[in-house]
Image (tube, rainbow, N blue to C red; front, side, top):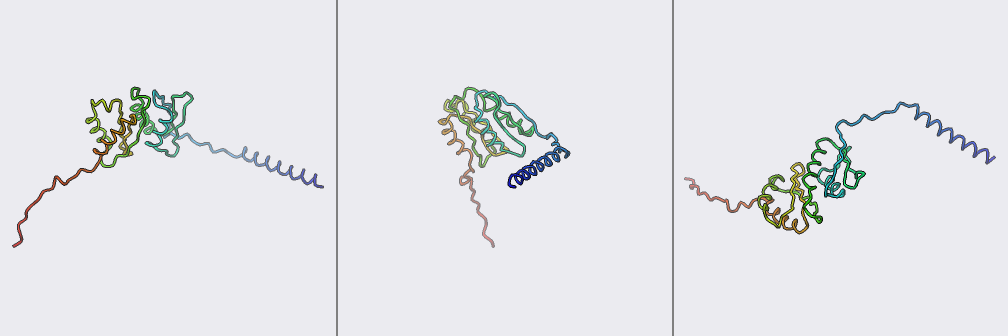
Length: 187
């Protein structure tokens, strides 16, 4: 009795599974249309590591619906799936930051900019550090959309540069610009 009951239950479960499979196969499938606002790009890296490229993408661009970044098949590639504008923006960031000559111990720093536009801060900082051996190999890439400045430098060079950037990126002290006016007393 127990054997026939277990056989009947097994047959019922098998029949239910077959019915479910048949209904899934017979049902019209909703085929997702390819998202025309997305593109997939393979970006080749020269000296930047894949981990740095992924961190740069996530910290500066951030994840959006449908966007993704992953390591490519070769060691020096990343695959990006995102909107064409964001892929172009990421390519520009990688092109500016992935240059040989910054040294193997160079790091990527992403610094928020508080008062100035990042492009203005980068321009002023470049004028100050231009030609100074202390800042040789430092790369500044402003991102006005996120109010961030991406810096590629060694830790020692970034420490010195950070002090400069803090002094440049602050609200100007207006105490020296005060004017005193004397007004006539009312009659």
